[in-house]
Image (cartoon, rainbow, N blue to C red; front, side, top):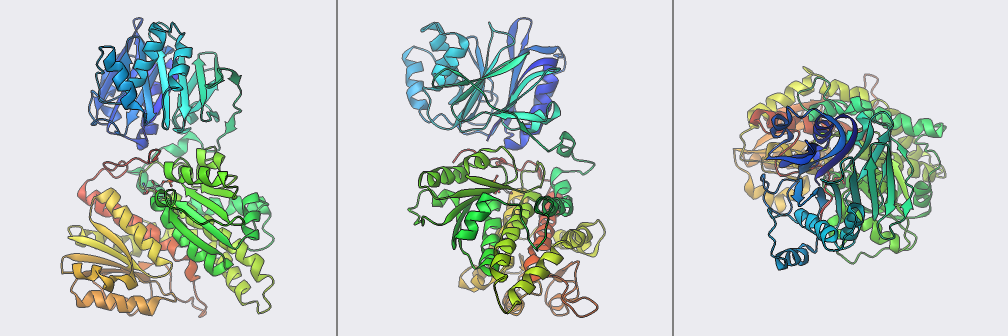
Length: 633
Ligand code: AGP
């Protein structure tokens, strides 16, 4: 979950480390620190809180980074988030930063105490520095060898990046589980980090370390070593097609708002990328893909994911069942991995993960790989661990998502699942003599290309939708609690709407299938409680309206979201948020297939949460207690 960085090269080391740490801050941000050479010694600067806290400490440290430096931004696991526990940790001449968990830390702690020594912090990370120190002082190992041998003594998913006071210009990294990526540029030197984002400012080709890899970085080269054998290995470069300018806010006050607005573009990017690759002769064409071939041959799919990605997966289940007749389960990875799931040999298992690094999702894929069941994934990050561990990968084209609360990556995942459902459904429908199913698929395909336009209309500042969102947020910001309810395709969106509000506004919110309300949650309703009813004109509309009436009868405040020309709902609710489409076009034909409503509803709810969060003054991009990439269980 933490972000780690190392640099040795021409640029001022403090600048590179601070810029890189800011790129990594979304991974964790409760404390931070850097270590760098100054006057022949390694200085460690650290502080509780965000990177801005250590910036002033480095104001007069502008020398070239030829002797190297390392940095860290933390999401606390062992020990409170304070300066003492912040990384880097220094023991003797060794200084290091760590991402992950050392599971056998008690054993190492005992060893340290048995030698009459006391760690300065409460972290498991500092204990690794002791191990390296012992290997060097007692076993007379070289620094690189000491890191390697120490690494073989720890268990759990971890990455470590270390320097030694007597070896300026040398940085050593090791990876097991928690990601580590390196880049080398002849002009600038060598760099390594927890993900590719900070490296994109200096290089567009990166090298991913595999589990059990070590890397030795010097100004003029990087070398990979198999930590178990100590032998040199090669790790080919991967070209990253995100440019560094996509990592900036582009004038928006928050990354999250920028990313909400980017969705029209990212949806189009994903559509174009897929259909350009296929030539798009038929609706929902895909370029040949082994994962899709496997799906074509099976009637059963298990999807695993966490958080927002699970909500997208749930929606995928609805589409894949309806369009493709596939039997689909969408499961929380953290539950699935410890159950005894019954998997069939001919089925497919799919992981859905924005980051491609989520520990539980990854663990399921690794377990299922051992059972010889084809695995695949949908992810936003090329070269991520989940992409590499899955037997095949499909990519969303959302670009880097910096806001901790997922927005554009969610719509990217939804889109990819819908495209799959459309493709598999089309293949079945081609043989359907009535042509009915094919008609619906063709229509959905055509209208899909209109979604970005509708979405821009919804989100545009001053649009009827955006104005209604703001007014509803203003009026309900102090509600005692929020329920989000919806049926069918709107149910996963209700779950996601509630999660967004909790994440960024710290407000109590729950998502429910609208039909479930009367089975318990309705007892909560009273006048200062708000219920957000997702009521687009779809096959569930009348039933949703009945649920809305039940809410109204209990006196709760109602925000309803529906088609712009809905005559009924605006009369029944306190605040009506119009989607920017009518139920029918002027010629009487339906405007948009109901399967596409989630692409408008989700961003509208993201905007609603954003408005409430900014009214409350929370840290929208880096909400408390969260980290974007959850690489520990
Ligand atoms: C989304 O807003 C959350 N921050 C979180 O639920 C996230 O979706 C979850 O941790 C899964 O992450 P992944 O998609 O990177 O696997």
